[in-house]
Image (cartoon, rainbow, N blue to C red; front, side, top):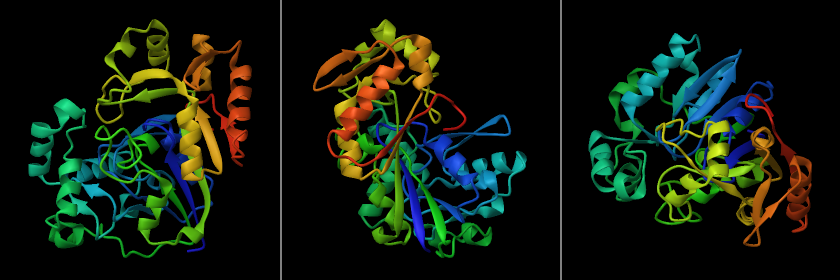
Length: 333
């Protein structure tokens, strides 16, 4: 392997990472697309040939004829994986390209039951058994892919050989990270770009880190920083409706708030993102709402261009050397 490009979320997930990884995968520059964390609690929306596809486990390389690897830091619910394979196969995609690390862990039915019984109500988890599976992994009682005869016989086990140029596809986002998020209202894996190295390469091999956010913040699940009262704000509800803010995995209505520029800058600084893409500028324009939080103050702008300029200038004022792009298209950057 010569270099890795990492795409990850700068916020609370649902930032549009699927769109970016899809466009990069379509460029023909990558030999492999790899996922490094999470399970089917994530969701990516991909547009190809004018059609919309949704995946939860399988990386977007499969849509472009590229080997797609589910890494050792991921957790796999086998029945859900097979359902996704059938969905892709019936849509005409080559699922033989999909491989799973032998070191990835298996989500068992008992993990799902534990999740539903003990976590989903007060933490707002996706009820997919993700946290109990990671807990079993940490407790050294987990079941790995290499231990399951059926998976090996079906030919889905990865030989752990990386391509020359790989695209690493993140799940969730910076502020859902186990260490950096609002604990315990977090996910159960590492969402920061350094987690991609668990695929089997050195940090020295990383050529680019691309962070994705939106022009407003959204959050699925429980979190005191995103109170239910946000649903009562007419402006924010307008953004939610125009932006179709529903979770890909759960279908739940996402809570919407104005962009928190302080948190965005913090995420960029800690992650080392050298490129930043801010999606859904078109939604603000349709709503004619141009607001963000900065230094704990809500600031309002005359139009989208003034808001973009403010964001750029304040990110760069921290001597953050990053390329900033704004996107107004749901299908491409």
